[in-house]
Length: 248
Image 1 (spheres, rainbow, N blue to C red):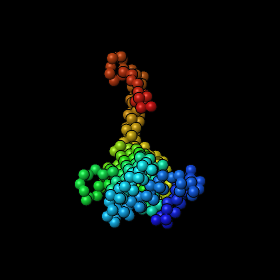
Image 2: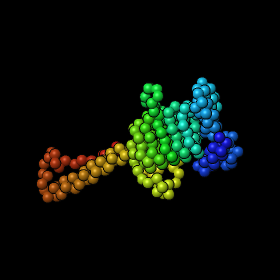
Image 3: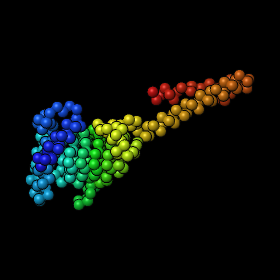
């Protein structure tokens, strides 16, 4: 347990630039306290002391603001940053080197006992602040979940998911991603706009470009004297910058 604690402290120092010393991390980081108490609660839970395990879990919740069910399985060097409002359900599994920010929920969508109700996070997953990961599926190794995303389907390894509901915006080799981007705080990466938003903006840009071309054609028709009637709908002037203005 204390070997895990030393690893936890080292992982905080590596991932949080605000951490200045091991003593500060040990005494002032609620994520460290929550993980330490969870290991006690989880040990009691595995030995059949369910009520006592829940009591330790509840005491940890009062102290840290982080609620971890004693049945949840958490790996090594997991970093719960800030932590207030984090909820981790009974059948959740968190792999080594994962990072979880405040307000995250690893929740279940099934009411049946004895089944996998909560998500599994594989190694090095980053879950941004306020994200909700709901269901008994797997988030692949090295995946990133953007802040406030709502994830209800599996996420492949190395992917980044954003939005409500969450959509995948990139999938790439995890080692290459780590070399290029390094650690992604709050699950934020370059070009992380919602794919639906990108598609809508592309359609608007295309429509605006088509309007400009039509405007040029109408100008040519007028110069050729083919638009003599002011009421001719083909030759009526229109505002081709309208779409651009309403989305700015």
